[in-house]
Length: 74
Image: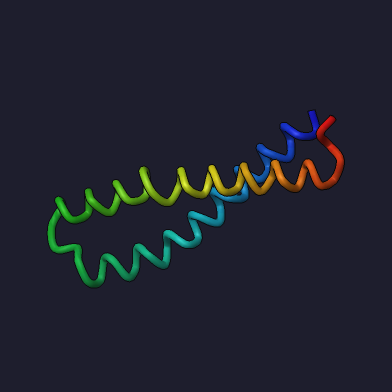
């Protein structure tokens, strides 16, 4: 149970970190490339299919590693 908790907390932390990184990317990308609604849709696609899943996977993996290191795994 502790292992699952570590993975969930890690995944949430990863998504939060990805959100913070996405703010910087949003500012950079919007200033240079967004000229229409189609360009804004590409930016949303980067968020939904890039930043957030990557943050979720990396955070979950980090939580798994921390949980194993702390002896939460059998």
